[in-house]
Length: 461
Ligand SMILES: *Cc1c(COP(=O)(O)O)cnc(C)c1O
Image (tube, rainbow, N blue to C red):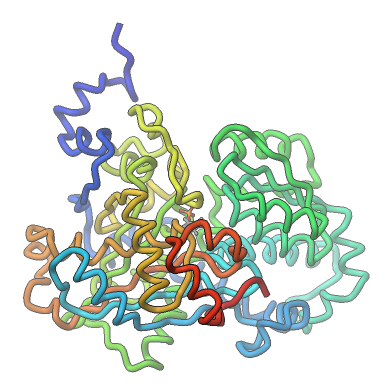
């Protein structure tokens, strides 16, 4: 008896897709996507357009006065939920020492760990989807018009109205935090279905906000499936479907235009002679997929986007490489989906995202937990910045690409690498409690907590 995976035996897969053997063995790999076409061609073939992202950005602008009212920490940015961009030269030197080679170009960190309200990349897509749903309901019931001052959404009559509706989501943790905090603030009844990987502090925080948390022994896929089926029987319930949501994707994609403005303000050029290489930690794919889409819209072929996944959970890499998308899981290939990078502990990629990344994404790679945890400590030691383990998957990226001669040659990058910007997307971390941070850092670094303030985002909001 041969067990098959999407109709083929493992041996057949290995012979048609040789890199699979190393992926399945849990090795760190780099994969350059052979299907990539120019950004213009890829974007013209997609069913999501620049206008859709523009519409999402406009919606977030309409909500800014409301966000500013209910989350005063967003006051400095006028109610726009955005994160800082930082150069991390000491980390760049440490990475070079660690790997015994320097990489040309300059290393930057996009600090989504410091996004207000929920401290992770999910504050982009997750909050956007909740706001869009709230707007839809309020418009439909004649309580609001698009030209209104949205700050009025903080009046009790709106929370009374929203309290008649329910929102549900399945999550490894951070999406639940974003949906839960935003939904409960508006007045919705929110249920978050949490996978086994979800951290206890995230569940406690949500319960303290009046969110119902349902826990599962199983992984993320199960939490989503359960949430989806329970919500399906309730017409008053909106299910935020992390595996299929266009709105989540659009909320993430707004990051492209925002980053372009930030680059302009900081005098960072992106063009044919100054390529941008972006390294995006990937779980189910919505966050990095939406951001990659936004980056291609903003920078065209001058940006190269790579997804980073744990060696034990390379769901998107398997889906794209085999072109089976969400029809294969890491478990099908005998991997266990266990990783310290809880935000990336996803066994099956989003079909919605995977199918759209085929022609757009430049490549993907896998990273060991030991590499991520070592880089977590390095970043703390060199820059006094704390990120959660998932967010460190990006740090291995610059070396992987620089050491991929065929990729560099194919894209004419060899002669311009000195002027490259390497951008690691720091997807989360500022809300991780101090006790958890201590457990993730080596013993001898803990002292630094006493001497060094955690003012890069701080603990909570
Ligand atoms: C969710 C998450 C990701 C990945 O986003 P997906 O949409 O699941 O691919 C990466 N890092 C952190 C910290 C996350 O919470």
